[in-house]
Length: 191
Image (cartoon, rainbow, N blue to C red; front, side, top):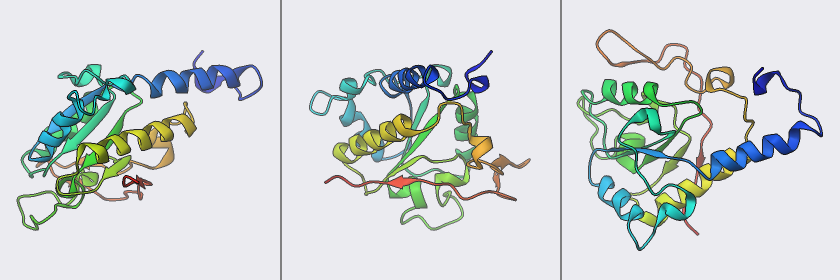
C-alpha cells in the first residue's frame, strides 16, 4: 500500500508533513556543470557559502543517488541526450535547477549548436538568473525549491501534472516537443 492510496485526513497529515520535511532537508544534487556557471556552483559548496546547512554537502557523481540536477552552463545539441539520460536515471521525486542564462535560454549563443533552454530537454522547477549567477543566487534558488517541496503534494508525479509531458527524444537525440504542456516555474532573485 503506497502513499497515493491514503486519503488526506487528520491521521495522515502529520505523516505527509514529516515526509515533506525529510525530502526538503535531504536533497542530494547531481551536478551537471557545463561552463563557467559550474565554477559558481562549486563556490556554493565551499566554506564561504556552505550548502551543507541544507543537507546538500555531497554532490553526487551517480544519478541513482541524486534527486536534484543543477544544470550549470550552456547545453550543446550533442550533450542534450546525455543530460536526458542522466535525468531519466535519477530517482523519483526529482527536481531540476537551471543555473544561468545559457542553460535557461541559450544566452548569447543563438545558433544551431546550443539548445535554446534546458527546459526543452528536461522539466525545470527553478531558474537561477544571471551570467553567471553568483552563489547567493543559487542558494536562493535552492531555498525556492525547498519551499516548493514543503508546500507541494507528496504523491503527485510530473506526468500527472503535465510538466514534462511530450519531452521525449527523437531518434537523433533531439527533443520532440509535440504535445508538450507549459511548465510552471518560480523564478527568484536574491533580496
